[in-house]
Length: 379
Image (cartoon, rainbow, N blue to C red; front, side, top):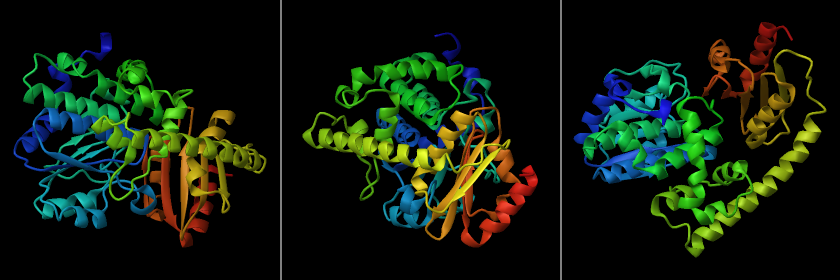
């Protein structure tokens, strides 16, 4: 397994030990995920690990359209009517300072597992399992699902009294495969441990043959996951993955519907791309394009495709209700987090990775933001 071998030194950060201690005294656990392929696979991996370890756990995937990304106080108020004493985030939470403090004030413990860059304060006594915080080179470029897998491996090693961390890891090939899906779909760097996870992605056909029958390529799978929207507090793909119900008629219909929706969406997006690419000024070092007519769900796709085509950092901004939303991508070395931090006074929310980030801002901030950003990069 080479570089994928896990040892005690990989888990020496106190965050792992503190998280284990919190889980041990918990009676009812909520796993809080994210409505994208990385977040859904991360949720499934941790639910599997907690169940294997003998813990009662439920999950919640916030609907991005209504709830945004990350912890959400309105939904927490509803969910905490049930006696959860621990909330574990996956693929989110690092920058949800207010929401974490809200939970702590109500005597609900919090563990953050995430891979996004921290740009707000880290709360004392909350374990952060985040590659940007625990500083282990082996975990440097993990996706949210990759972080969930590492944390799950640590928990199972201790609860199931396995011989070693590597032995614990390879004893659950299904979770490794799920982390591979998150790694592929989140487009993180496939080096080191991620290279191993991406290879194990191919086990999909072995564990989920019905799901794999609907796929022509990796991006089909990512598209199906993106079409899996939270309805009445449950998410179809997470339910299929956790309950192993893909062969039921209900699940087969759901997978086919999501596949067809993704196909139609991509055909529609191709038309949008051909139309908008003619209008985008590509003769700048950093490409910035604003359009009130683009559906906000297409911003990331458009930024990604233009970035691949032009080999430049790209920021696409569009109207989203009474706000503006921006999605930034880069396929070359460029740090969007450092870049956006200079303008965070304009944002309602923002976050992401060095090469893929996004934000929302009030409509009355857009002109000043664009003026500042263009002056900064001298467009």
